[in-house]
Length: 430
Image (tube, rainbow, N blue to C red; front, side, top):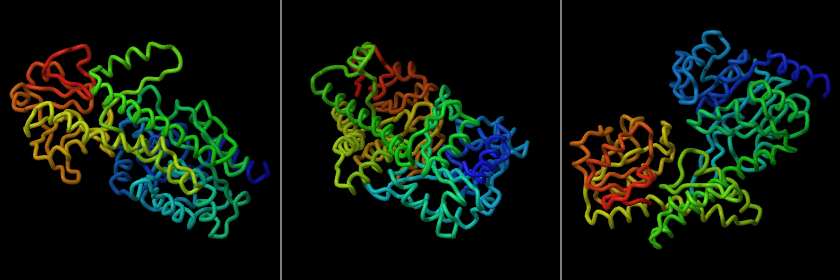
């Protein structure tokens, strides 16, 4: 490395580098706290006033961030937060963790990335490492971010360094927090990659180095496309098994006894959260612009998005009338307080559109005010459960009294196989 890069490398290596994390959501806050716990001075930047206020007041709003850890880092003055980008002037490292939604079906929206980069460029000082973690299509770091940062007169390779390192956060996964998940790193050039690898090695044991930012961007999309395709496939298998009169859950249990060549995926209402519903479509869009159509990604996305409608059609056949429905579990994932693109919400909307009376129970969500849904959490009691024509198990939270539901419900549509091995006429499964 040239001398200037060696100075930055030394600041990273000795823990003196000042780190700015842009975006304090499910990715950014755990990352910021992890670096702060190692003694780095970390500035969290977010345009959301509530998030910044919560950090300053030492209140964790992310399930994967321990409240005591957050308090410790703020009290030690290792972690601070603000809505202004002015603090970028002091940063040696800037990590971008902003959302990357879709504008419309199959079209990426990188406006949050562009807005963040343009704000960063106003205050970027020489000898700074910039790392993008936000999931995006291959080429974004080099083709979009690089020229944006150079517009203010700074030169890549001399004044700043640039890499992509995909986030791999799995909300609610206690076994694999951010510090225990191998980090993939790809720089625009080799020196950028080496600096980024040195940075993440301070909090993560295993860092996997790839040859370019494009390769790192593609790695993330391969991972998420693998999931959407296999979830789409198992959802199709579930529909097929229903037509054939076969229990799909029994078949999956049998197939996973094979010690090689099979990985179990499970059917459900589709896919939720940020990553799986959107990220593969970034790859689909990019490939389309290069004259390649990914049939697997589009087909899987279409199958998964149609699952709530399929579930409603099964439910209508099951109860034979428009009735009163209790949906149990409205988050997209078990034991995770996250409603982003949650399929049970789509299920509720469709049921309401068909004229069903719908309530919900979820131990993590006290109320719903999303789109056309405005509901309060219904408590589980024998009296309440008896009042519904059917209870739909949409998300299998641990803190739910399933035996009570089994004893009191008139009918149960078990979408998550919580009543595995129980055969009763009043229970149907996906």
